[in-house]
Image (cartoon, rainbow, N blue to C red):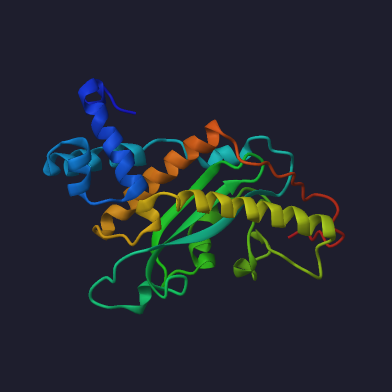
Amino acid sequence: MLDDADPMSDIRWVSYFLVTLMFLRTYTVTAVLAMIFMKDEKTIRHWVWVFIEKLATLDLIRWENRLMNDNGSRCLVTVDGTDFCIREPRPFSTGWYTKKFNGPGLRYEIGVCIQTGWIVWMNGPFPCGEWVDIAISLSSLVHMFEGDERAVADKGYRGYPQFFDCPWRHLDNQQQTSRKALARARHECVNRRLKEWGCLLQRWRHSLDKHGKMAHAVANIVQLQIMDRPMWQVEYYDRVDNEFDFDY
């Protein structure tokens, strides 16, 4: 992660990496971290963001990883947006509003490989009120699909069957309904793992331009956790069992 010129090359700086992990996990104020680790507040602020930037640039979330264990299904990933609470930006704008918090928030688009449970896509942040889930996907994700590839998604993505396989009560048979529901449920578990970190669970109090670095840093940590301890697996195949399997 760090080369010889970076602080990790000296074992004395390992403590600052631990401070960074504690900051991300608890999102406590610097004064508390300084008291626990017996270090200067200004020094902690500096090195915490040095390590966050390093964590954010780890090359762990790769789009090509969606092809791992590919079994020939059209849908290789599940996709969904997830919102994080922030302080009210000034000047006031409804463009930040999300009903999940009844207040301002930032939205990220997360893609999870169906066959492995790995995070393979992260796009954001976007102001919640200005960008609904489908708009974010249409702006970027759909252009990454190859051939007849699609993504499993919830009802908010209806209207674009060439890109998204949503719940269709009158078209899906029982097996297909169950498979898609399990894939979406596992995706929600990934979103929950992200929000186990205090910096994403609590209201963001730092500048908005730092939120993206922090969120990608946490996503890389969660990805490492999933790679080390795989999530429960989903058996998914969508080329058969659906009599209404349209060729778009």
